[in-house]
Length: 129
Length: 136
Image (cartoon, rainbow over all chains, first blue to last red; front, top):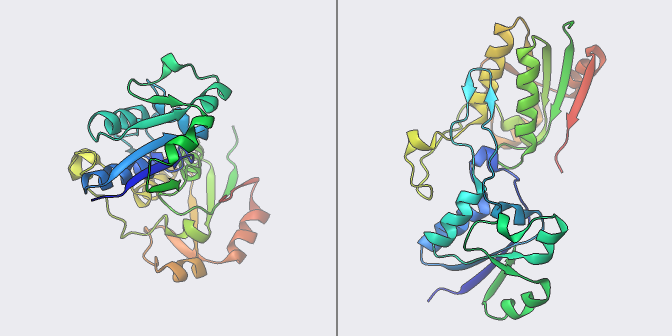
């Protein structure tokens, strides 16, 4: 039986344009498909991934054009709805950035910093990315 | 606007940092304006022009090779050279030789070349301005 794994994601938008996704969200989706049991906590700048309606224009260099630019909100929804990976967002990190809860994609779960230790004990592994 | 000579030092490896996306947006703008561009590709950036990079399908995205259309920095480098030429500028793209050897990325996009810190020094001395985009 797979160990329960909690993944705290803080590094955000690091290589999303080049990879057309976040490499850690991608990794967890792939591992979930391989039988893993993962949960995500978005903290720090990564809480921005949960804002609905975001997206950057694809990169253009001369005649070369990127056609599949990343959409991080779409990828968060994919985790929740299709991969069945719960996604939490840290409330204080949202507030510090002026992000209101009605700006978020549906399905993400706000959690306070003080509640995190109680969440940690539910998991076999806690990883900070 | 008069034609300038602009030097860029890049350090990040492909597929690991947003710094390179920013760099290519700036490089593209410079090439479109016909400026002469020097690039010193140092450390991980020595792999940007490596020709054996391959796009891949993405099963997590549910996309085949064509649908994913995964970007490769080698294509971006080649497009930059072509765009500069089209607009009357040129690109002197130097891949740090020792960095290349360490990483085994010695097959470059045509039009780029192997070089050394001496090339970067020459770029600094001959340029109107220089932008270093360091790795963090």
